[in-house]
Image (tube, rainbow, N blue to C red):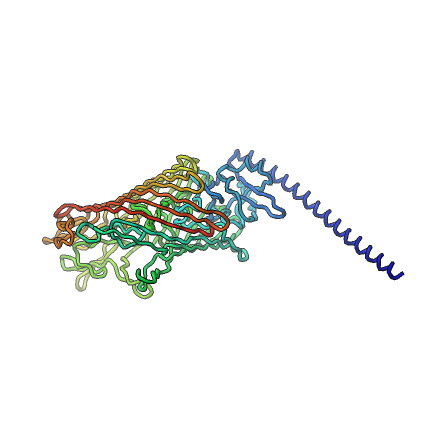
Length: 618
């Protein structure tokens, strides 16, 4: 009897378990039915939105994977990147646009542009809706993928940088692998390990950073010798922290560092211990309700050409291996307070940036002792002072006001176009015993750039230029901004710089490029009491420029520098472990001097650059 009772109890327990399992199965079936109904509703909403927007509304893609949904998000009229296996949308600091999820690939094929569709993989993302009646798009996204964190941008057949391209890496592209979450804040890693080298037919001891004004003339022995130099100093690491303030605004902070700075302990014979340096460090606020964007901190100057909107980390930078990029390239990285507003569905962008100023002086002919210049009339002009305290012991120019930069950008459906202007205010003080006065000049200039998608997302042409007075430091060659008149007044130097190039992405693994750059500085000089002063003075002696070790003199102020270069990048491996790529580049540069006594010398340099790079987060 006792055994029989035990058996009955076991049967009852088994029946209870079966009942629980049956109940669980019913709940799971109900969940599937609810999920199916939800997907159906989402399809209907997406179809209605597509009909209302006539192809101009939000497009989305998702793949159901159990309880997870992988969502590709694009803003209204947003654009994808160039070739590559991961999404082309960049990790921008603004709010990303999201549409409604679609569970099958048929709907995706109808609503997502092809160049965006082919990149659609990544971790989860959770949309957050704004509820705006006049803007049916989703305003922001809590993105688990870097590509979901973008400012709203319009389709222009150029698109944001494909992150694995060298131009995007130079601009500060983030990865999509190193994405972490700390509460409401998302952390995104970027950067790469870099091993680069250059072989050149002149000895210019600057590695892969071209300092063209140091290209020697034949009077120097290093003109007659070749040079090889390699380093890993331009390896880079970056970090972005980002969070949603509310349903339509985001705030982010971005840091980017490398080892490009020299230090007193750096030596090229044993340790090669280059110093850690700040490249970029800024905060950004983006509001997609007001279409307003704010940036504060050190970033690429707004004067730098861009490729879409006026968006950080979307600067149009050449794909070259040389860390100085290209002769004639317009750029700076400096403190700024940037205010940007976009209009017309993110096609028209207006920006104003207040940026740190600096004046690069040339004082040829004058006696200059750490920024204190002795004038021929016996007075003294002060143009700079050496840094003190925690600032490095180097000249810092006297500045009375920041640089003021304005930009307008236009993104039609074909190409990206910009116009830009700058105001700069060089400043010095002229004094004699017991008295003195200040001098301030008004300098500046204007220019523009364009990116033309000859074959959208495959072949593009880039053109950019800037002209004005007192703005030479904004070019890669670092030609002077100003010199002094004989009486000590500031004399801004006219300058012009321009670049052009063709970039092709024939396959997902290959990038090919060719660029031409040019930068020129004009003459500003004076003569006083038989003495010659200023920049490009025809009375300077160039008699010894063509003879090795000559003592006849070679002033040779630089008139112009040009560079022509071609190169290619090849990605050997690409996957969840990151990207491994190698590049090779051929470059030819020429430096011409202003004519003086004995003519105007010129010099040239040929270079071969090689690079091997690992991008663990892309």
